[in-house]
Image 1: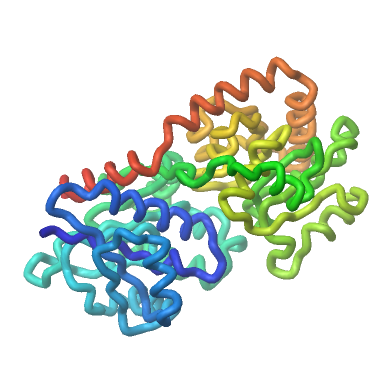
Image 2: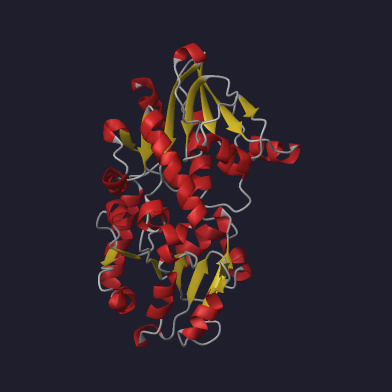
Length: 378
């Protein structure tokens, strides 16, 4: 029996993010697509019984859960220093940089280790990442370069960025993400629409005030006179590092309530917000994949997005692209692009079908099968 041990500690984070979602969805499908004679176990830091039960609920098909003897923060530091902890051997797959990266061979019971690098922000946007986090990421990428058997990235754009700063050689494999299978319109859509207080017409985004996300620029774009009658709904937190979205909107001269944050939403509510939006906007200045673009396209919602290389790769011409160059003029161009989509029924219809067609090209099952293929090739 071959055991694939997946590092799933990110799934138990207190603040869900793209990496935790990636870890959850990929692991679900690794379990579902396990070849004959293979099983999947989860590896986590030391957690209480409540967290362990939650993990079993989120990933019911795991053959077992291997808890390490240190907490999550200590685990990140230990693996940064190359400290070996009892993993149980087999094949190791890390859906993030949280990975046991050290010299290994089959005599130690550890046959291979693969690690996932989601973006190059530690180099391209260290201030946004934070000094401590950027240093940790750089240290882990350095260990990956030395010890990983293969390195997974979500897009060719990220592979090219990493090639410039980390020299990872030919071990890189591109395996992207996908919308969750649970991201479907629920039967109680009307009730959820009312509970969320969704207006009849609105622009939607999934974002926060992290400078890489471009939300500040999107808020400024809402000053376009052609958008005056339509609000912006933000799926994400109101506050980021002491800044509030409502304050940014006020400083931009927008009336109270014109920009509203909805917080983090479950799949059913998120599906309703995305499906009912007139336009979905993804203004990111830097991205590793851009999953919300594909999520919106799944529902046929027209998408306006930046020309970030990873987002361009994922969208593949199924959205309206806005150039980031000339940063001062970016909000104005965003506003014009959104207004163009809102006012052109023919364009909206073309984007609707192009987006649904593009979204159909992504599935977590396919991603998991590529991971199994990668481990087989190693």
